[in-house]
Image 1: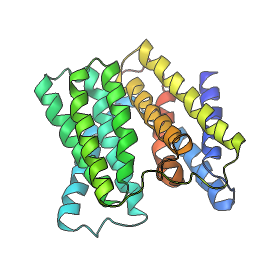
Image 2: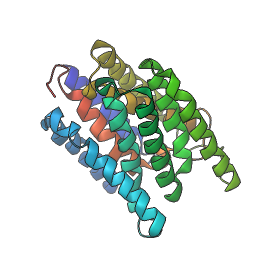
Image 3: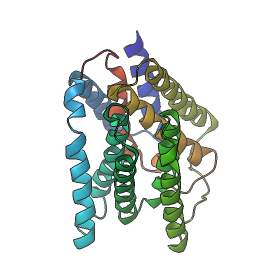
Length: 262
């Protein structure tokens, strides 16, 4: 029953990402649902094993941007860059509770990952994505009782926003066009319910497979709120294909049994 409800919520959320429906968008939504089903078939331990390859790929993108900044610029490479930037940090955050590293190692790891992800997003033209990612990271650190790390994330986010301001990036926009009140409430409601489900699983058992969707939907809920409530000039709602790529693995992880062994 739980899986059916999550599939229904995911379908509603995916449907509400698009203001206008056409064949291409319907195919994208079906592809996202198919990827959710496929990832759900993969044991959680294999998904967890992707942690270091994803982190290394994200570092590889950073190195590539330093020497060949135009190679990965533009569409569709910005989808890959954003995906790696998000999941390199997300995978590490999901494994923090089990690793139990000392404070200085955690500071170094989180700092390197966050700066690398922020740099990648900056070169890809998605620097404002850093703000909701930073807020979600700080909230998760608070829940995990790792408050000493939050000033570092806040400092990096502040630097990113100063750079965005110096670059002339507008923080506030006019809002999404073609979005009626019903669609607005569906977006907010579906994302909030998925966040609550993720939080319930996280509170019941703190494992990689519960922290990952909780952190992911925390980020998505904050991003949607910033776009719809604060009229942010950019965000995942402006990039539905990137949003589909990020949401699908999160929903799949939420579908996995809470007692599944890693």
